[in-house]
Length: 393
Image 1 (cartoon, rainbow, N blue to C red):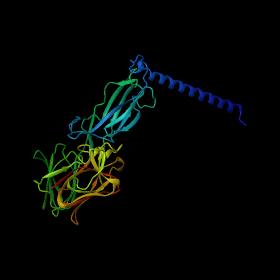
Image 2: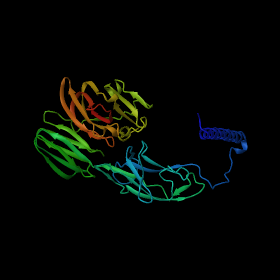
Image 3: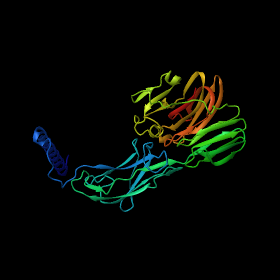
Image 4: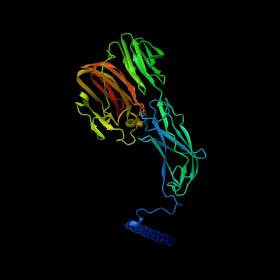
């Protein structure tokens, strides 16, 4: 049998529910009346004492292509970079990763107590610089003071917006030489450094920020490569593998003319090649796909290996495989390993393993003189992102 207390509690709950229902109906009716009246279409606000809304205070992070510390025309927004917020007392308040447009957003609101910025004071924004990267703008830590302003959207404003934060990776050059060789690092034709490489040695070299080319001279092989803004992997260097001639005409395939839409499977015949399991996709098509954003180095489209399964492109007529930009599609697959196999007819002439990142592509540049088929795969079947494939024909 229900007790008197239970009956009273149930009765109060019913009364509160009915009162809430009636209040909501009345509010809905008042809103409908206001909307029906044309005089309310463009009302000049009179009461500025209350703020009902919220807004984002954003930290913008970009890949500083030219490493000059200034967000310029050639630079590109970075996705997936972690930014942390600390409050006026130095306590951790929130964290956010940059989205595909390069913004890490933190909500500001005096009305919503759960907003990370809801009280006046000085807040610190810290961009987490990835290992092996640098902040070219030297402003990865910035502070902003927020003060009350009734009538503003969030009820609180800051002195200014945060300055853009530029990041770039330390460029490394890696590969494997089957014979003794020297690697000369150049800037505008002037030698900056010379590195000896031993017989059968794996090498990994840090390159000067202003270096623009490398020259490899080995026993029976030679390579020259104009450097990109990204880490570079030369793969296997061997006298048994002819390279591309220095004067060979090069063609860059950027995948931006595959489709004007967001997505399309590459059809055989595109750029004169047969394609298997390769899809072209807009950099903004996949939500939170960090590698689709950061692996995009030109235009608005990249390609990826569908479902992470092996993919390839081929031609009956031999061609030179110069280079391609490769990235992991997701931060969750940071460190995934790609296998790139190059064939001339039925003969496998090169097979290289490349460690991938979703934050930056790797400039894989084997500079193979003649191949007929190139196969891409990943060790754990994560999607591989490709952009700016360069061939010689």
